[in-house]
Image (cartoon, rainbow, N blue to C red; front, top):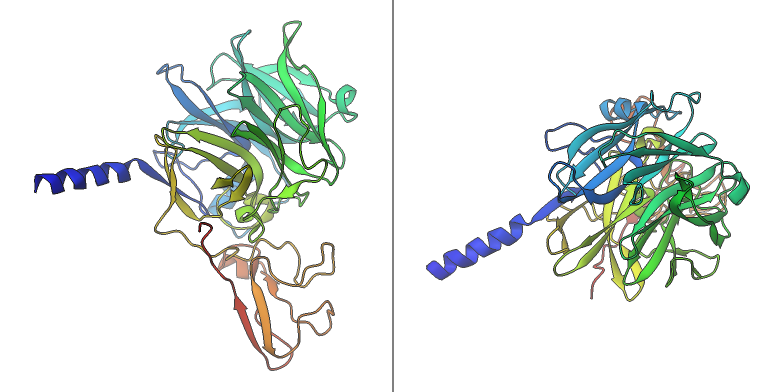
Length: 437
């Protein structure tokens, strides 16, 4: 009996170490307040209160984010900056609000403009934390004495001497724990067909970008971000789909300066194609280095307040690797053990991909490049009735754009459409398989 009780206790302790991450809903802090954090990043810094390492999550709160959370039947056309928020955690699941660390009053010396896509680096020589954030047609640097702010205006950088445009297309901050160096990862301001890497440092007492390396030139890509795994550097990006979800593209390099391979031709991450990275864009990554494993978390931005594509602004999914090849595990619910670094699929996970039918931006079939005949993640077979084709006069439309009235009773802008102009019989299916042997 004693052996059984000890075994039962051990199992319960093991289960207790796993904490659940649930996508497709709006997240809350430990005290039940909504988390508003879009286009940001998570970084490990020393907490000034406890002198221990914590995760600090920075992101933007837009005015429309609160409106959409309270009424997701309305999609908003503009992004109105409210503040940069900060949340802290020891396990990436239970978050405490650290308040607004950058306010609109602090940046009001420039007329109302776009603010977003940010990250934070620790500048050891100045003993300062530096936040890099897109600010209209330039890059704003703000600094603080502690990771939880407040951040104040430091300087605004015109990027034109470096890349030819005053602004960046998209950007994030990557901190290399192995070297202690920090970098800004960003794209060209027009067209976003080039991606650059700049080391963050100090020159003449000011926080600046010390250099500029072009690591990609090709198709337009945004949502630029990086992580390091197995000694290799992975540079990620999304397609230029506005606010909508995208495939997750990547390049790999053995050295942070490159070359990033395959040269100027980004690969699609396996597992991300069936629902466009869980209907999100590349946002940032978090590495969890535990006692038994290292897990890389894909932290996707779902810009639902501006795309109307479902619930939840933050979609986090674990990556797995076969050699140096990453695999995107599109999960609705999964568990993370912050101590061991292990993760597992939760019992309540919804394995259906693109079940909301929000992955497709267009009416399907679509003649617009890339030409598309089937709904993403689904196969429609016509048994009787009009065949699926690019002929808009005869082909059935496979998805439906919800009306204003319909959005008051269903979530999202799109739904599955099952109809035809003639009597019909049709099969719509999706095959769900394991990603492990």
